[in-house]
Length: 303
Image (cartoon, rainbow, N blue to C red; front, side, top):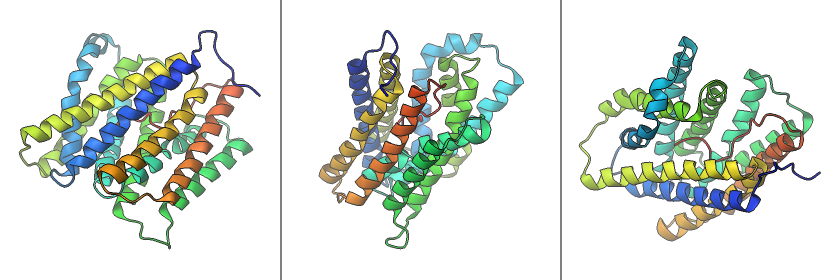
């Protein structure tokens, strides 16, 4: 069954924008990796969001004009706390495991979103979706290979990252029902920054200007990646652009090997491929059945 397309769908433009998004996210992760042990990962995460506040300024008028209820404030506060935990875990994982493993395990987030949508948003878990989720979990097991190698704290941190970012995405889906995406994103940046303050204070060391410059570049590439991804999703359906995110795993593997001297682990590539294939299938089914899309692009969660 062919994928449904809207009259103004531009598949090639969507693919190219998603390619640009993937490259931006890979550069972002490489910059985080380059900081190594020079700064505590919690402080790095905090400064990345603090410096990124500058990108919220264009949405300031919408932010002030938004009519927020107590439910909105509660949702934003809860999402900020959950997302802050996910971001701190991700920065920690980046200092402990190879780029390719971080990227491959990040594909699990949409799987958690799919499960969460069934548990909390009333989505139906059909047999095909359950099978796809099972395949994704097999992919995760291939990457981790418990019993055959050590599952490090970095791997556990990535499992926590994907779970918390999945919860954050579900809260965002609920928030955008009656608020603009710009307001939702702006509040996320603000609340995550606030939530990380006490953790950053506990490990604070005065950063150098060079470290601040790298962190601002990280914030810039993250923002650019999400902007390009927005353009991709506007140009073409998620079912068209989703498979393109596989290239992010290839780029991360090559970058890790060529720049950081990390070995190429074929099991990580195989596991990541299985996870992304299952996510792409779930996305395709959403498009074919013309349901309200739940599954996000696998690089969607905001880091």
